[in-house]
Length: 283
Image 1 (cartoon, rainbow, N blue to C red):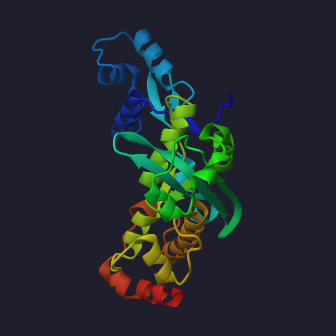
Image 2: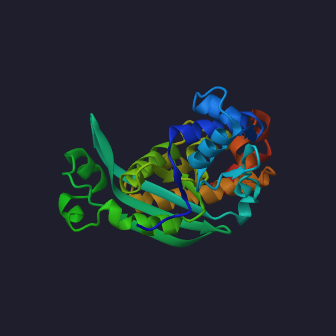
Image 3: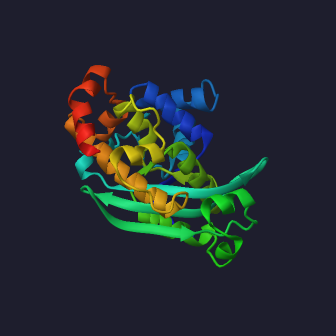
């Protein structure tokens, strides 16, 4: 099975370790990690080092020193937005009460230096029949999916396409959760490690005065159409167009890095002045 550098362990213990170090300024002694995460008080240093080493092996977010575990700073967070590669994605999925959702279509666009430079799109056979509502909403039929690949057949190509890019989606929590759920079926215990950016959250921070921040409302606001709404490629392409406009807005406000973009929020005075003027020009 092919290995991918953008996959990491989805272990709750690893996440707890990451959270512990984050609260401790990015580092903690092996003995402290073992005490807090493994609930092993008074473990000797040799045992603690062995347990921690096994826990974070092959996870590029961590570095091991003589007696301490350290979180490595992710350089992409402080890189200029204009220099970052983004992969803007959308998934269409089916689900039923008590049954895990399955992806039926994945579409994505690679954005670099303000331009779309590549694309990825595929139908995916979920192995179950489509609910009538989903078929009506998307226009995807069981017949269309019958000859489509299983997720396991496209996962390597998807992970290669995503690479180290920042993953962007309109409500990224939903799309990335579904993606990681499918990935875990192929690579048990793993998830994608890519940084992410949500255009819903970003639009709310930049344009809090708008009545709605759904994709249709934002497309209307910025004056572009969504081709094939509720199809993965169409929605992903619209989200990519939205991202480019939001990046322009951030640049106009002096926001130039990913970490700044996550925390930026236009105040009402700014929105009513320069930012409001810029938004009017974008209509």
